[in-house]
Amino acid sequence: MRRWFALAGLATALGLLTTWTNAGEKTDKAGPHDNHPPKGFTALFNGKDLSGWQGLIEIHQRKKMTQEQYEAAQKKANERLSHWTVQHGILVYDGKKGGQNLQSAKDYGNFELYCDWKIPPKGDSGIYLRGQPQVQIWDSSVLDGNLKIDRDTGSGGLWNNKRGTQGQTPLVNADRPVGEWNTFHITMVGDKVTVVLNGKKVVDAAPLPNYFEKNEPLPARGPIELQQHGNTLWFKNIYVKELPD
Image (cartoon, rainbow, N blue to C red; front, side, top):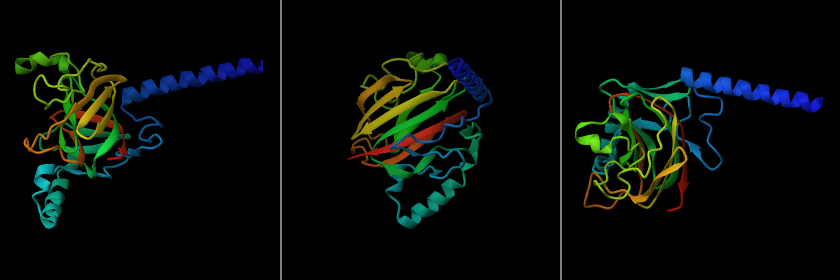
């Protein structure tokens, strides 16, 4: 009898969990286990505010500034963060004009990164690594014109790598249907980037070039950056673990 009650209780709990998860997806509310980093990782997004984030100053511009110039430029950039808000434990970009990318206040060298993301139909975004573009996020099912060649290739590729080079096109389309949450696991060591999307490897140790200074090596350290591309975006569960140089 006790075993029957225990199994019934477990089934009820699982039923409630399923109901809650479905309701959470429907209402765009983060769950009770969201934004709590796993062991060894640090939460880049705390689920409450923009602590640890700042307005965009591109890394190649920053290194040309004096400390005084940088502080003034950063203050001005931070005044443009109103398009990024936290809603129900989720980091949201409102999709309106006048915004900019969101940049981590800390620079990173070698690291592992987890990030959950969601886009609307025709959505477009990306994650910059060490301030360099970018691990692509987009709805590739609707591409046309010059981008038609990339239709249905999915997200996770190193979009700004030269056409036809390693990593530019994902190995497999691992995207979930538009409007559902996706999970990146990104590992960066040296200039090599590996991207796992929803449990499937889409980029395997591909080199990321220095986009802004093409004849220079990739910076050893730089910010992690969330790209806005003129549409609504949702992010949560952004965790980072620094790796040895």
